Image (cartoon, rainbow, N blue to C red; front, top):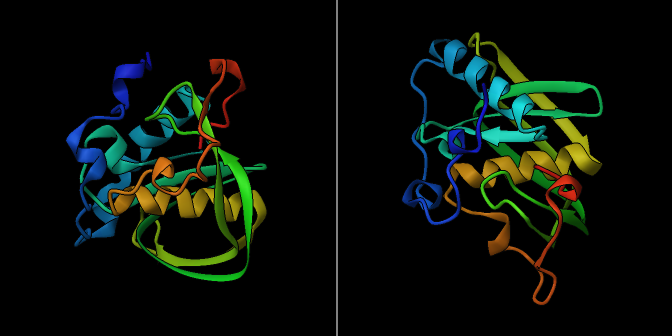
Length: 160
C-alpha cells in the first residue's frame, strides 16, 4: 500500500541536497520499480529518487501514455520559455506558475544501463525539467512566479 509518508515533504533536508551520480545504472532496477509504484500510487507524472530519500540521480516519469526512467540525466534546454502550472508530490496542496523551456533534450541511462536520449516539448519537457531539478535540490517553488503560489484541493493538483 502506497502512503503519503513514502514521499518526503517540504522541510525534509534531503529535498534541498544534490543527489549523487550512479556508478552502475544497471543496479537501479529495484529502485526504479519502487519509484514507479510510488509514482503510480500517488497518480504523479514524475518522481525523483531524492523525494523518497534516495540520494541518487534517478527519476521516473509518465506523460500522455509514455513513461521512462532516466539515470544520471544531462539536460539541454532550448526554445522559448513558457509558463505553466506545476504542483509536486513533495509539496501537497499547492500549485504555482513556473516558467520552463518549451523544448528539452535529456540524455542518460535507463534502469538496465542502456543509453537513453529523449527530445521533448510541452508537458513532457516540463516534467523532465521539474524532476531533474529535484536531483539538484531545487523545488518548483524556487522557480514559481511571485504571487502565483496558491493552495488547491488535492484532487485538482498536477502532481509532477
